[in-house]
Amino acid sequence: MTVGTAPPRLARTARTAKRKGPARRRLMPHLVGWGFVAPATLVVVGLALFPAIWALWLSLHDSDLISSGEFVGLDNYREMVHDPALRDAAWHTVVYTVLYVPGSVLIGLPLAVALNQRIRGIGIYRTCVFVPYVTSAAAVGILSNFVLDPEFGIVNGGVKALGLSRAGFLQDPDQALYTLVAVSLWWSVGLPVVVYLAALQDVPRELQEAALVDGANPWQAFRNVTLPQLRPATTFVVIWQMITALQLFDLVYTTTKGQPLDSTSVIVYYLYEQAFKQFNAGYGAAVAYALFVVTLVVSALMLRRSAGGAAGARS
View (cartoon, rainbow, N blue to C red):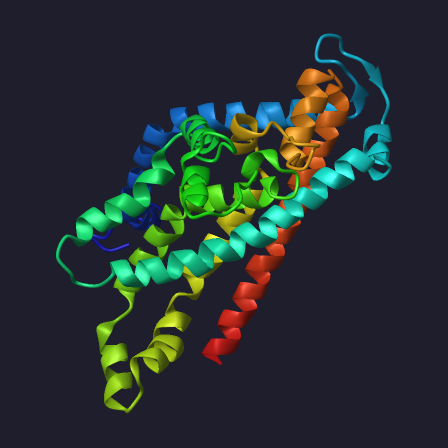
């Protein structure tokens, strides 16, 4: 070993320390970030994970929420297959979802396109569209009952002034579910509008201008250039609105409470009645878990289909 040369072991130690230095510097921001979010993360996980595990345990028991109940295994899940009331509630949920989800897209997208124009007072119009979405379900329910009352409602007052027959709306078994769809769309269409509006503002104007220069009319430019750019936004809107529709409860509770003649009884309201009115908590928990699995499977299939469509479009 020559004079002034470090021993091999010391040289390796120096090189190792030099490599670890940048790694530590890169790791520190992550550790600091997790340090800030860890308390909130623990609270959220605790409030979500524990009830989910407890509900799974409950679904395997014949419990009334007061006593622990007898272990019955999968009997609650087998009972669901032969429950006509649950089938009716599931059918009402499907009808509501099939009408509500496409309606959110078909109404939200044109409104977003209209609100994406540069016109005077556009901020006021955007606010008016979004304000109902931040209104509570209780307020929307009370307002709906008042406006749509068959005898004293404002809508039927206008219908009578036109010389037409009054409509039952929320008190008519043939109209109640469709009325809930209409009220829900008025209430929540602000979310699809905001999502589409943000996506439209991210579409490069150069692409649209190039299509117009190439001879496309505005509709062709929108269909062939803008719509493909909105695919991720559409996927988000469809999945989010589908989950919202499958979990419909608050609007039903504040308006019809599943009536008239159980025509608006949806799955979540039905399991609420089973668990908290009839104290059949084990069966209600089983229905909740079945709904969770269905929601998870449908969301996964839609994500997979969307990913496949995006890959095909790129190729």
